Amino acid sequence: MPSRTTRREALNPDVYLELLRQALPIPPRTEADNERLIELLSGIDERESQTAEEAAFAELLAIVIEDFENRHYSLPPVPPHLAIRALMEDRGLQHKDIAGVVGNKGLTTEIIAGRRKISKAVAKRLSSHLSVPVELFL
Image (cartoon, rainbow, N blue to C red):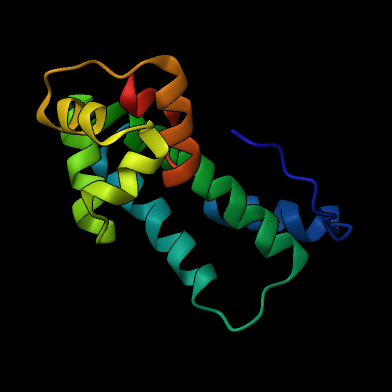
């Protein structure tokens, strides 16, 4: 995960502590626990403006919710050639759009058909070009 370099406003510890007391954001163990945290996060996100404390609390909730969902709703691995096809379809890309990144039309055809593996170098270029994790192609 990329590190964040944005400056954060100074938090009032008493206000932040009160948010924690009201919500008791313990890591969820059940779907009901997770739904409760999602509702809290949605309530904060729907506000037109947030205090620095609410923004920091929303970030904490998002991390806790994401962790729960990653552990309980992991997606099955997708073969790299199917991932490329799905990304191309989703983004309206054509064979020629990917061929420039892969290096040539023939290799692109072989990769998309699933007949050739994707090299690490090509995976890195695809990852960068499509703004997705390189692991998707390896």
